[in-house]
Image (cartoon, rainbow, N blue to C red):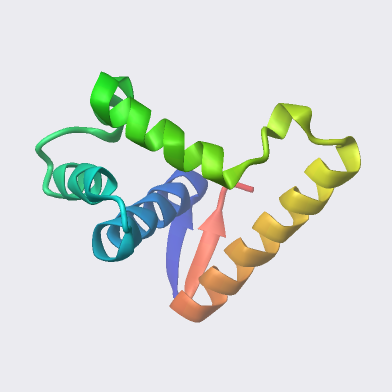
Length: 101
């Protein structure tokens, strides 16, 4: 069983989300961003700081809808629990032990 630190799990998930955007986004700019980050031409931080990319990513985040700071404590707790459950399922499926919790 492979052991990963919490930050490595976050990187793994981020990489998976970028691959998903690259393959399936209907927005050409988002596909371009994902491709640029995954190919190493630009970091995600740089992409978020870029005006054109920032606007495209901001549009994507608007579609997500929930501002974590605007959520009720109950909703925050529910989403945190769902995230932990997802993380545990991923770890089980991939044979990963998450260290540093």
